[in-house]
Length: 114
Image (cartoon, rainbow, N blue to C red; front, side, top):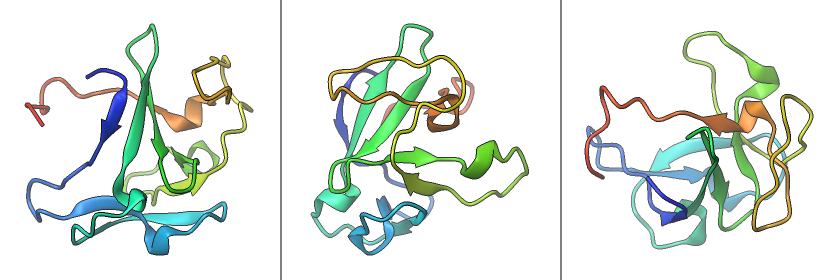
């Protein structure tokens, strides 16, 4: 995976991951929906030196966030402004800083080509 703009598609349902209703408010739901060609379904990937990455929605400019760093299974994801509150802050080309709550790792064991 490298820096760039992607559409994330659920291989089981064929639906795209998006910010619900193209919302720009903090806490908006991340959901899957039929492909509709909107920027709400476009995600800029920011890859860091440690191979973790952040997903930035092209419509809202907000990141995919795990609310309050919730480690419970089936926690709902949300869209939230980058706040750099937890963990080491890492600058990127957009000038924002992403906290560890908004950074993810790729599971190589279950990840195939997109």
